[in-house]
Length: 239
Image (cartoon, rainbow, N blue to C red; front, top):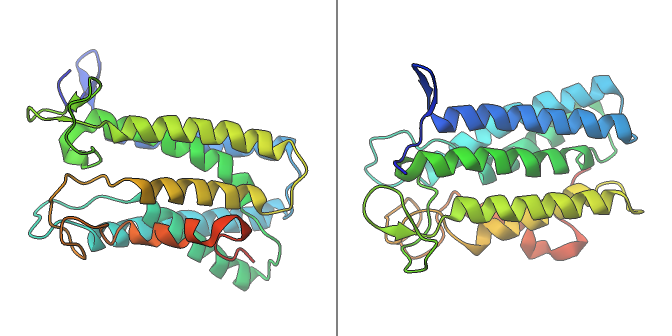
C-alpha cells in the first residue's frame, strides 16, 4: 500500500482525507436525523438548528486555532485541524448560542452518537492520507505496525481510534435505551473521547511542537485533560 491512498473512479482521483471528511459529515447528520425521529428532543426544531449552526461554527474555529497552537515549530505547511479543538470550540459556541436564545435545558445528547460515528469515518481518511496527516503513532516492532512511506513501522493510532469509537458508539446506543438524565449521553461521550485523547499522542516522538519539549503533550491536546479529570460526575457545564 502506498500512502496517500487516492480513491480512483476511472480517470478521476480524489484525496482520501477530503473524501472521508465529507463522508463523516454525511454520516453524522444521517445519524442525528435518525436519532431525532426516534427520540424526544428537549428543544424545538428551530432552536435545534441554532444550536447546530453554533456548534459547526465553533468547531471550525476551535479546531483550527488549537491546531495552530500545537503545530510544529518552523512548519511551512498549514497545521490542518484538531478534533479536540473542534469539540471544545463547538461546546463554547453552543453555550453562547444557548445564552442568547435563553435555552436552559441540556442539548448535547442527540450529538453524542453522531459525533462518535462521524469521527470514526473521518479517521479512515486520516489513516489513508499517511505521513502528511501527522496522526500516526510511535515506531513499533509489533507485527501490525504500518509503514506510512518512510520505511518506519508505526502504531496505526488512527485504526485504534476507529475501533475505540465504534465500541463507544455501541455503548452510547445501549446507554440511550436505558433510563438516564438529560445530558448524560453527551457527558459519557466527552469523558470517553477526551480520555482517549489524553491516553496517547499522535505526533511522531521527538517532534518539537509549540508548548512542548517533544516528550510531553502538545497544546492542541491539553484541553482534553479537563474532561476525564472531572470524572463521571460532570464533564464541563452544559447549561
